[in-house]
Length: 186
Image (tube, rainbow, N blue to C red; front, side):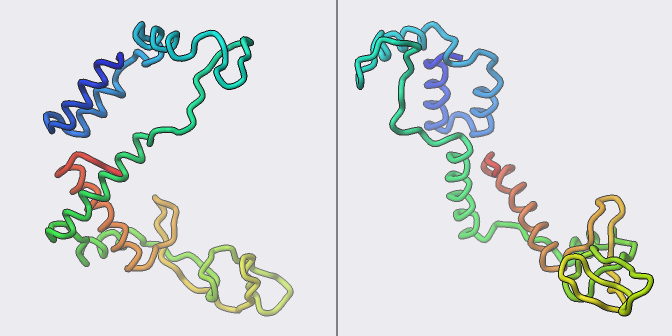
């Protein structure tokens, strides 16, 4: 893809003739890198020349030194996402996770695993000769009875709190909503 094609995509994007997803697809599906095009090579010869403009050296290879760098694609999407997110928030159209969805997610945590009653980490060791029987490797707490925590064998994680699950599910729903509505994802 050459510079002119990229400029056409940018113009179509500015005129809202294509979505951000379509522009992204066109740009990233190209197998030709911009620096491989004839136009780029001509522009390189014009800009770089055969000596350094700062020190006068003619020893190559000559490169164009940028004193600033344009924002990355990810930074652009981040800015756009924030603007659309605020717009959707003001319109009160952002979805939230329901209590039923949270309970459904947590219902997958069927097993109980032993954990430290102090820090709730599963890094406990059972001792044979010392009392209290258990000791936490993480915080050093000693205890006789470990705390039982719900565990998901498929995901291999201990269940997070209801608040954390609700926050995560809400984030995922809002991200999907933003992508479906505005064609941008973070």
